[in-house]
Length: 170
Length: 170
Length: 244
Image (tube, rainbow over all chains, first blue to last red):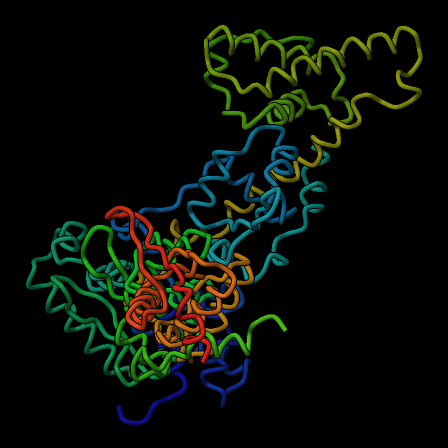
């Protein structure tokens, strides 16, 4: 392999990035290609992986791309990497922060009607939530949150109103 | 892809492991194969990557296996890692050590009026500062410090009197 | 369905409630009511039964559940009064309005939480690539100006003259001149009085200057005890000599 193909440069960049790499980061390093090219290159790479039966693929997350293992292999990987299990309370706190954040612990407690300290600690520990310094401290969802839930941005979350409509007339 | 091939399970395990994964770790999760099998599987995977022109490969490292990108792509990957800019606090600690050193952490804290623990750790980690054994430990600037700041020796540091002209109160 | 018998067994079969709002929502939905019907007695009564049963079982209950219980009791009594007197309490404002809004918001969040959980979850269905290549960050090259600016920022913050000027500033000749001019005003000085910065290089320079002045018979050096102050005393008869 003597010539360097932009496709493989993009692959190498996504491969060696810790977490998702932003598209604009890729474009900075490989300036001869366009944003559209990045997307079609990723599709091409995923096709190559599929055809050769690879256990991983590239997925879109947090305004960029990252490598993830295919679902089939999750049971084996779980024996190696501790899986993430979020309690109902932690998911609720995450939802409040995702929809109403940045917000303080008091704001979260108010919405849930109960103290959220331990869930908040868990979420900060798992780096799903970032802390904004100040008085009071405020919480906001992190880049890892987007990666974990496969979102490009918070705007991809379904509208809260939607839930009210569907479940409001129970 | 309906059947799960042990080859791809091994690939998925190496893929998702933080750092190198030990052979015995792989054997624990895929007990139906032998140690020899792991090695030949890895060779097989590397041949597949080579043939399809992939930018990465599996390498044997410290008693296990890990993914690395091929050297050809190193310049691009290096461009991905932003160079470290020293923080204001780290620069202050460096300044104190450069002018007062060798000095203890207490001396540095005294001059700065704040705790310097984390900056000191960063500076030692990046080898900008050498530690002199003793009680208390003393710190002195390193050879790398001179390189980073473009100095031949500490005597090239400007006299602080001169510096008053530039930064002193008008 | 005015009331249900809440047995210990029933409690243990219930889902875990995240808080009082969660429990209220459960009861509202179980009774096929809407949030608007919060004040209805079956809901409030069942809430009380639940709380009492849990307390009988010595299961730890968050204080918020009890706060809600007393609020609901108040709500129940005030709505009974308003029905009986055919008059709305608080001049037409429904006392439960705020709680109903909280319940509606909470229900939205609870559903949002469930929908988050249904998304493809990293570290559950998929796993990210592990960290394998550690590329050490290179430090940006910089220059002495950065050091000088750092010193300026320490000074700015501490409002102190933080770093002493360097050794070569103390020229013995200059210090001799300084001592001499000080002796114009006073006959006797201690070495320490002369020092401005009290730094080691300055003390050494002063000591050397004092020895020089003594050698030239301009001052006498006196020390009362071994570790006592060293005094410089002007020799009057040689005053003219120095001024030359």
